[in-house]
Image (cartoon, helix red, strand yellow):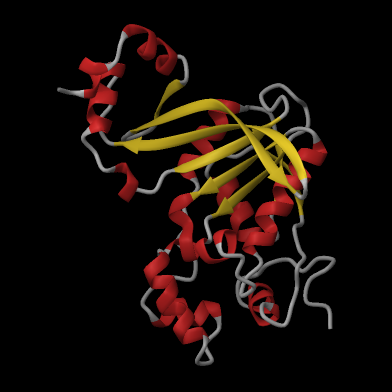
Amino acid sequence: MSMTQSLNPKVMMFLKEKVKLIKTNNKVIYLVGPIKLPVSLFEETVQFQWYCWLNCKEVAENFERIIDKLSSANLAEIQQSSVLIHGDFESADDALIRMHSICHTGDIFGSKRCDCGFQLKTAMKEIAKHGTGALFYLANHEGRGIGLFSKALAYILQENGFDTVDANLKLGFVDDSRNYSDAIYVLKELRTKPVKVMTNNPKKLEALKQAGMNIAERVELWGDVSEYNQNYLKTKITRSGHLEGEGCCND
């Protein structure tokens, strides 16, 4: 028996109200949400609205068909991205966003080799403090787009004298292969007004603009410098072109 045969009309009604279909050039994005998500953030509980999205090559307007196909797919093996919304993101004149690339070691384990975990929590805190904003969590961006296993290989090279850029290059990857097009489609579904972007990376800023993001201002996001990540942060500036700001790599 398929999932659609086991779902009663009331259940389907709840699901239909929370799913949007975003058509792109050659595929479709299904956006699920908003879903209430109280988040523990620096000893406070902050209310966010959570959305998740899924890429599909087949466009199915029939919602029952979508659910039926998902029930037979192993989505646990396919990473999906999501976004946390705070405040009146659609209508507020001023909104702060962060396009955050997943970092399994930094975000989950709290690794000090990078500043990703710090940037994730700080960005969420700044969005809550600002009153309106969004944290995009991009699941296909691990290791600047090379994936978790390749990132582990790159870490071995880094432990043997290569910096983060050369480690990727020696493994046959480009320094940064991240793509933001899907996130921009989702952003435009949620908000059309300009946004302030938290980033230290002008290349990311340019990539976001090229993908169609309406950017009003850049906001820096430096901090959590330690003996473990100082070389990593300096490489961001000297090799990857990040803009040095207050609280970064000051000798």
